[in-house]
Image (spheres, rainbow, N blue to C red):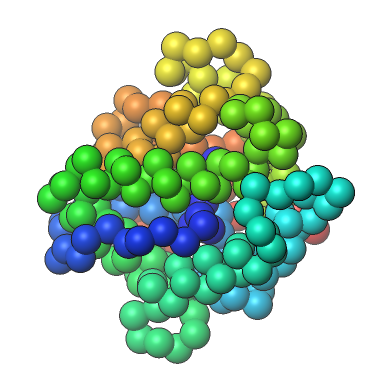
Length: 222
């Protein structure tokens, strides 16, 4: 799974927002719903991201974390990402602001794909390290389940979805290697093709599929 909570990295070069393909808009709306932990249609630090940061950091209790003071790093990153997307500076991000922020990222990818891939490798790769609790360079089902559960989502579909994505990449079942994770993240963010395995990155967690103009909803667990 990808996240908007990657360890801070130098941003991509500034670029004017590019027109977004309809397929990517739907994915960004799905990602917005995934991050909307309390299901209120807004992203806020207190309701959506601070509880997630605490749960992710708690998994490392008794272990040496890949980053010093992991909880504060996650909180700072969530704060940075939500602030970057908060266009009207009201302390919260709605779905339109969230999608618009990805328009600028998509434009940067079109302008310089190599730089964008380098950014993904650093930022999403850093978050991979946060999820990889045994630091073996692969995510197993428990890592992915813990991430989805931190956002309050049902997790019973994650195993089947993982196998589908791995099969689509021509990889053996069971575990998601770092390079494959980065490929899925890049596909989800930037490749509008309906055929790429990365389009399934946030399937299997109870996200309802809306019509073109309907908001995404989640079937959250308590």
